[in-house]
Amino acid sequence: MPELPEVETVRRGLEQLIIGKVIKQVECLDSPKSFPNDPIEVSTQLIGASIVATRRRAKVLLIDISTNYTLVTHLKMTGQIVFVKEGSTPPLDPEVNSESSLHPLKLARSARASADDGLRFGAGHPNDSLIGDLPDRSTRIVYEFTDGSHLYFNDQRKFGWMKLYPTPEVPNIDFMRKVGPEPLEDSLTADEFVARVRRRNNTTIKAVILDQTVIAGVGNIYADESLWGTKLHPATRVRDVSDGDLRQLLDEIRVVMNIAIEKGGSTDRNYVNAEGKKGSYIDFARVFRREGLDCPRCGTIIEKIRVAGRGTHVCPSCQPPSSD
DNA sequence: CACTTGACCTGTCCGC
DNA sequence: TGCGGACAGGTCAAGT
Image (spheres, rainbow, N blue to C red):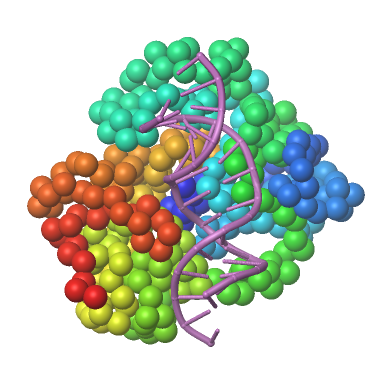
């Protein structure tokens, strides 16, 4: 699901693909929730304007427009932003939106997941003629640029949203005011991280690092991965975690996120980058979605439990539960 | 106030 | 084969 590394991958892709392009038309194919702005304001501020920059804060993507407005986007769980060149076949990996019949685990573990796409292609999709074609059933908003290329905002589950704000107002958006520091910026020191986590001494360590007001951008995948790296059980209360372990946890968050950005993010089910391609971090994951498989560190079978209301993956040997 | 749970959605998988 | 229910998880609102 789009967490910090996935959103950053999309941002970098868009930076190469849409800077300078001029918007010719905007079409909203869905309820106002996907695009709750006044349509007249949207067309006034967007039509004829050009894309000047792409930014990211936490899991929020920011696309700056020449009219001093910014498209603020949250992909939530199943959102995608896909760029398609004029006249080119849309590159969206067909199995991503067509919900292949394969179990995600088998998909993730398949050594050559892409090699047999062709077979799954015809067999799995309900409508072969629409395979990989955009817009599709999940498309919410379509931007057409003057050169004939398109940008699609897709979201199967409609949790995501895209909203237009005057650029100077972006820092005043409620979420932006409350969100915690960026984990990959040097300005976040280990001391500050420990202090922020310690404010929530009575809850579980996993719930705390998922809290966007404590630290930005950590979601379920990288929470499980970084806790495994620190050998901390996700249900451990913060008060039972040492300062040293908290410092190491920040290091692990940084390590897994940097690797994930290198790998182009994690595609569990729906995530694709700005060119419609899947990320490969999931193949390097050490616990996430690996229940029933061997822990890569000690060989113990990885278990799936529930912590902070989320599916949670742990090695019961490396990450023993605290006695509490 | 601190913390947990449910709602928002759609599609898939599993058991009966 | 069909059907109901559990599940997936980012964030906010409501509840304890």
